[in-house]
Length: 76
Image (tube, helix red, strand yellow):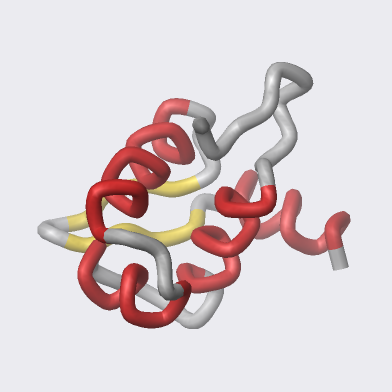
C-alpha cells in the first residue's frame, strides 16, 4: 500500500505523513511516533512522498515542499 494513489493524490496514510511534517522537520522515527504507523511504513511512505515532490529530505529528516503544503491546504 503506497502513500500516493494512481490519481496522484495522497492516500489516508500519505495524508497522515504529510500532516506530521506540517510542523517542521521530522525524522522518520518522530513521524512514526506522531502517526502511530510502523517505522517501515513511514520510511516507505516518505520515499513515495519525496518521489511525488511533496516532501524533501534534509539531513536525516524530512520536510514538506511548497507543493506538499499547497496540497494539504486543498485537503483541509
